[in-house]
Length: 540
Image (spheres, rainbow, N blue to C red):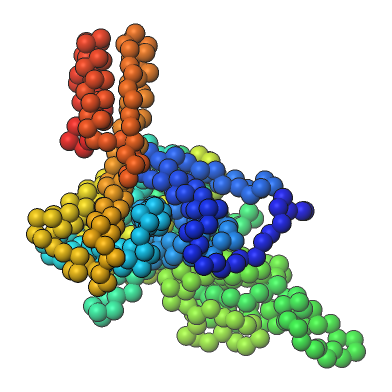
């Protein structure tokens, strides 16, 4: 398969912002991430130039992962943003918009790069210091005595991803499940309060089922073989049951030995020798009272049949993703070879085994003994695209809840934090006579430079402040415009965009909203209550 264009190697250049091609790419990247911002952000379909799998998303983790560029500056920005998303699982689009906006404005202001970097860095440190302080008025302490704060935090993360395609009731249901899964992974009887080890949440995706069928189960749910006899579980005695786990392949193939030299005597059958070794392993685990036999890879059919005839439940092809949760939950040690006997300390245990049905899919439920620090979240959705986005969003929301254990604070959403920070910095700059040396260790080239960089920084905060509300407001204006045209009401409004923020001015928006509201109220009786329901004037 040939390329559409020849691949070029990455080349580092001096003053990359002076290159018009790089500037256009930065602008394009900023437009992509800004249009995805907020609960009403636009979706993006990602695919390569020759087709292949198409992803519909507005999530920064997916967008940044699929973007490929040969420009070193763009690579640096994307890798930095990916590291931010990996650490915090939130605000990836916010960080991208702010970063790209400051880079573009530093070029537009036509001042020395060192001055812009120094001022922006000190303003960032000033914001961090204020946000970490006790007198910060835009953060809320998480109350763990009630589930409302955790539920609101999970709901705000899930609602910001329109590609999940969830209704209001479905969003509340998924948010509750994320909170329940988070609470189940917190140990309740930890002896060391300083070093608490959180459990694991395994996400199982089921396509074609209703979202309301999603659930959280204590323990693990693993796929059952198609020929698995359900009556084998019913014949089991009451638990707990002994478990053995193998990470090595038990297929009995010579290829599993690796690149080694084998010396085979004349007339010997190496495959038969391996099979005998596997059967000896089966006899040992049966003698030791093993009820659940699990393997990360493939198990030889003869060994499977031998174990099942003796009442052992066999689960193969467990996968690397389930291996660590199984070890954590059961307390077993993964055996890396079958050529040596299984020691007694390598065995684990589970409390009970059950069969759970989700639609047409049957799964084996491993119920843990003692404190269940491992749980399984079953996510259902109508199609694969929405299911992939929902799975990623729930994993990010769960990570955000985990971070609250380290810092039990949450910032106000809807642009409130950005507006508060911008107003606080402006207040410190003007009314408290805070001069430039307090913000930057390097003096500016002229007195106008400090004001330009400060205005640029505050403009980007204000742009992020109105991004969410503007996306929602414009959809409401468009809906009312369509309704007005149907009822014969003339509607014409010219909105001028602010050059710094890229969004309509507040005064212009208020005038447009007032005119539109008055026209609709005069034309159709009873629209006043509906309009107040659609647009909250306190947010505009």
